[in-house]
Structures are given as structure tokens and as C-alpha cells.
Length: 170
Image (tube, rainbow, N blue to C red; front, side, top):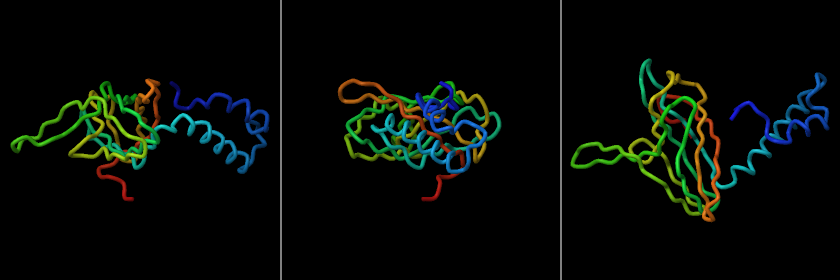
């Protein structure tokens, strides 16, 4: 999937409004951006992603975590995740067992409509392993969250997480 590709139909709508020519002004660009957001928000109606961030890494580090707040718009199950910057991406859960930190794949995470869960350090989170490059503070890291709706329909939500050494301030 090309992250720079325009949503289906957007290119033809831009041509109809003469937004792709060299005469396009700031207002026309803004309208095109609104069309792009509108086209993508319908696909993301099942889950809202807020405050997504990835812990920045040092050279040769092979794993990191991604954290965010997820709000289900209707009943869904978070079934997995992927990213082009990591060979393995899993929903993980960290727990303490007799003073020893344990981390394991969490499996599917069911969410009720209206429910918000926090993927955070020390609990549920997205674990990114076999990193293909160093993730530097300030970089945007693409993530794809895989979902399954109550009726069995599968979908994905694309998110961009900002890399940093601490959560973003709210």
C-alpha cells in the first residue's frame, strides 16, 4: 500500500474542481485536504486513534513499543498490527509475576462500542520487533491496526505515531 497514494476518487474530484493544476491556490489546497480527510475518515469509523507515539530508539536497537488511546465507535476486536519499519508487530501485554516482568503476545483485544482503552507502557501496547532502521525522535512512524467487526467484517485503520522518548503532552 502506497502511503502517498490519494484515496480512490480523490484525483478525479480534484480534476473536476481544477485542484491539480498549477493555478491552485491555498484555498483549493485546503479543500483538497478536506476531501482527503473525509474520504479516509469513513474507513476509520470503527476505531479512533488518539495520542499515538512510538518510543524512539538508539542505533542498532531491535525493538520498541507503540502507545496510543483507542476508542471503538462500535463493537470491534483489535486483531493485530503492522508497520513498514518492523519485521514483527504484535499487540503485547506486560505484567508483573512475583516481582518479575513478563511480556507476551496479548491475542485479540475485544472492545465494546464507546469503550476507550489505553495502550501504554506497563500494560497493553504494540510491540515492534526486528526493526529495519533506527527510529529517531520526531519521526512519523506508520502503523496499521487490524480489526474485526461483530459481523466478521475485517478492516484496517492507518495511524501515524510520532517518535519520542516520552509520551506527548496532552
